[in-house]
Image (tube, rainbow, N blue to C red):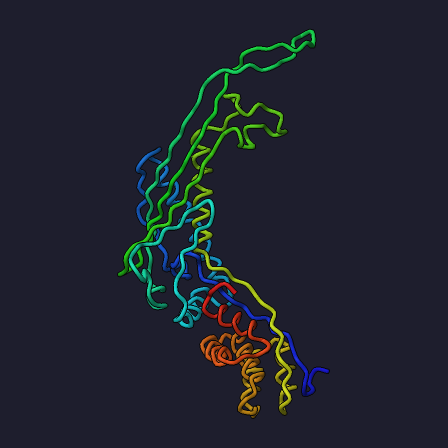
Length: 321
């Protein structure tokens, strides 16, 4: 029964995972630099830079509309991540290549530095024009063979995003995307009945290039996007006097009040359940550094909830829980 000693509660703990690429989680610290076209249409650089700017603007607007701004949340997460090494994870079909310099971004403070994102683009368009024999029905409803023109357009885009943190060595993230007009659903028409290699059915080259570049950009944006989520954590029963009030406040979602109520409990020196519950409530209340310290105190003990302790540390250091 809630409110009695031995009762428990389930706490909803928000967490923020850092991006796969070591860049600031606050989009206000990201800016768009020069996008250079090494090979391909001249307009491709301005197009891709503009699309990236739009996505960063959307992130900033979303962060501004949240009760707690992403900037505040990300700074709290970064301040608790001193033991977490930045990672650079490849996400197919993109390849992610970090600078060979050790410790590209060596500390949470450096991770929170402004970054300029530039890019070098290479766009290759290959077209094959030929004829092939197709079967058609003549006016007598008989099948006959006749040559028909054929167009196959293949596109490969390679974008090397160059991330330049202020005062640090730059590193690169490369995305590669390929396109074949024969697999483009637009080539089949609205009902999917058209011949995909008929020249009239193949989408324009510029349209296909934009589509392919956008897919690669979306892959890169996923890699620099922090992930937000929530995890349900059940508190451990406490036998001390006042524990019922703690659980009642936690059940209502008043996590700051529950942390305050915990300070009035006098636990035994070896009461690891108290330390765990305090860590969970502190995390839920946004007291991330204090929660991390308590989780780390628990991590040196062999307890039945060691997995939950590890997940708590992972959430606070934005590793993968």
